[in-house]
Image 1: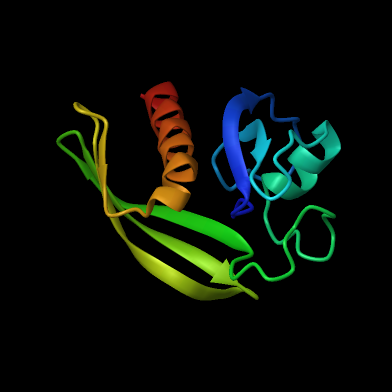
Image 2: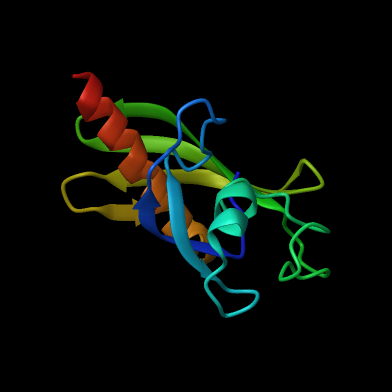
Length: 133
């Protein structure tokens, strides 16, 4: 459940013994709310885990969303089907289904605002899958 204002860019090492990262891996990146790159502690504790309202000085008070969540429901023949949800106060605010084609890297069904989150989530999903093969 990453922060909706966070734009993940570079994968970070994931320390042993920490909570699983909602995007599959931890990422450094930019903040759309502030236009800056958050410091490492903010990135690790808030940007990657969402629900930063009232805890992050850059989080917009009037933001309709607190976090973004993804899940894979089927992966067959190079096509990944899944669901996305934008949450507010731990409840779905908006949701839908996505389709990702591994061959073309085509992504359908995800709004542009969450596409960068979904692409890094899928990249992490595929890395874990290949690692376990």
